[in-house]
Length: 83
Image (tube, rainbow, N blue to C red):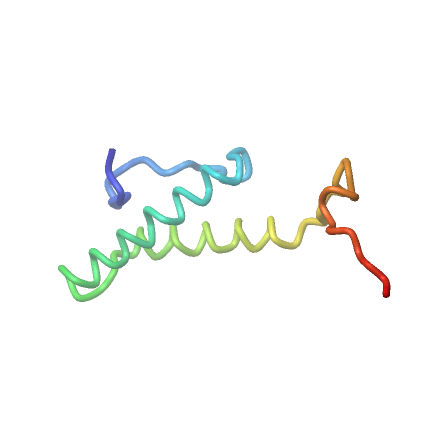
């Protein structure tokens, strides 16, 4: 398994169809590719920059979505003690 995603490798056309862990893995691979390109070429390729921007926009979009309410709020939030 490669930890980077080079510009020559396939990239999903629609990031909205992926679940969050898959988007996060792609984001990690693109960040590693950016680091590699800076170290070896002095600058990133245009394709890698575009992919990075698309992933950033998708993760930002997901962050703006309202959170779902926990099924058991008593478990999600710690009990408060009043003295």
